[in-house]
Image (cartoon, rainbow, N blue to C red; front, top):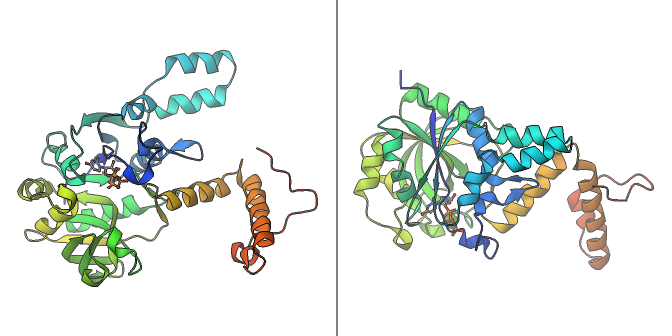
Length: 318
Ligand code: UTP
C-alpha cells in the first residue's frame, strides 16, 4: 500500500508575463475570479482532497499571497465592530485553510526549479503539485481521483487533457499507451512541441502526484526551453526509471494565466453564483443584443443561447 499523501506544493513564483501589465507589481495568482484570488480556489481544492500540508513557492513581489492566508486583525476588528459578521467569518476562515508554509524560489528559473526547491520539505515522501493558475471547475474530484489512482498503482500520476492540434504547442505533450478508460501509461514527453512534432494531442495539466524520485530527475536534467528547468523534462526522465500514469480530466479547467481563459472563468463562476447569476445573465443578454445590433450578420444571440429577459427585468443589480 503506497504511503498516504498529505503534502502539496503550489508553485507561485513565476513572473506571469502573459498577464502584463496587471502582473507587474502583483502576483498573477492573486488576480480575483469574481471576488476570490485564483490561488485560494487551488488551496481550497487541496484541503478538500485532504492535502492539508501546503507549501507555496513564492518569490519577489509575492508577499500579498502570505498576507491573504494570514490573520488580519485590523480588518477583523473593523468588521466585528460594524456588525459585518458574515464577512468577518469569511475573512477568518481563509486563515484557517490548512497548514500553509512558504519558501522563496530566489530566481524564477522554471517550474521544475520551483518544485525542486520543495525537496527538503517533502522529505522523500510522495506528494502532490498543483499549479496556482490552473483552476478546476467547482466541486471537481480530479485530485481525489488522482490520489485514488496513486493508491492503486503507487506511481506518479499526471493530469492530462485532450486539446486541439493548434493548442498543443502551448503545453507539455505526451505520447501514451492505454491502461483503462481514462488512464494511460506515459511513453514520451515533449515540452511545447510544434504541432507536427507532438506525440499526441494529450496535454499535461496543472495537477500532479509525484513519487520522490521526481527530485532525482529534476537534479539530473539540464535547463531546457527558455533556459528554464522544465518539470516536463523531469517527467520525461522519470519515465525511464518508473511508470508514470496519465489521468484524463473529466472536468472543466481554466488556465487563468491566459487572458481570455481568465475572463471566461470569471464569467462562468459569476453565472453559477446565487448572488450574481441573475445580474450576470442580464449583462450578457444586453451585451449580446448590443453585439447583434452592431453586427446584424452574426448570430450572437443564438450562439449565446441566453434565456430572454422577463419584461422590465433588464436592470442590472449588483
Ligand atoms: P507558468 O509558465 O504558467 O507561469 O508556470 P509564469 O512563468 O508565471 O507565466 P507566464 O508564462 O510568464 O505568463 C506555471 C506555474 O508555475 C509557477 C508559476 O507561478 C505558475 O503558477 N512558476 C513558474 C514558478 O513558481 N517558478 C518559475 O520559475 C516558473
